[in-house]
Length: 306
Image (tube, rainbow, N blue to C red):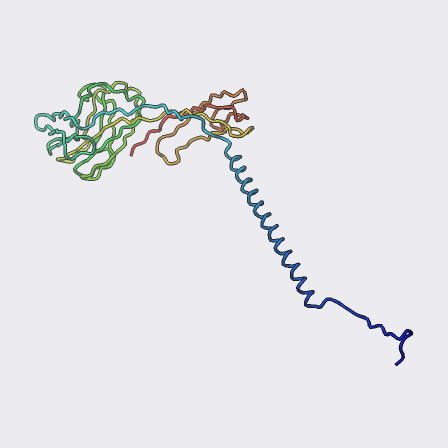
């Protein structure tokens, strides 16, 4: 073997990275990057959720542009009691042969201490059966209905029996005969009777029971005869929760046919801005959050009998 000059042979040394070491390094980088990415994504999602909640809260506030300020004041007519049934009524004589037996029934009643119990024999026929004179006159001119409890000994048709009201004692010349609707035999029924014309009922002195259809011997019990009071107007104060949003009040209706609405309305505003009235899109124009608007809603209850 031939040696190089000087008598020495140089041996080269080669060093490198194995495939296993490379894999370990790559895996470490991937794991660290994954953890970092997960942290960043979690933080972003949390921030996005908080932002979404803030946006929804803002939208909720934006939708609530009208708010109530103060109390709601209702104006109207109070109930007027015509008979509580606790006192004995006066029987009305039929010729010389038959007079109803009238008592204050303390057992078979619906309210308070008794009911007016009126018993008519077979000889009694169509006419005023009994009445009670009021201790003081009652004004029904602002009331459209009378409510009472009634019990009849047999099944009746509507109008077989009636309640009468009169501005004279004894109910001899009734201002109105009001039909009582169908009653089930021997069962208490709470009925509401519509008054057709109350314009002349400013001083009622008597309420009575009238037999319109002769059905032989019968017994009737009457309790808690009351002219129904009702609200005739509402006074509410409204204010805008957001600047620039109009206040709108929608027209009430009578979709459930309960006889409560025939509306008219007026508005009174403390705002210097334009004000519109009337039920067709009634509003106070463009008002600011510091402005309050007073709205008066009034109506005339419709007639209803049930």
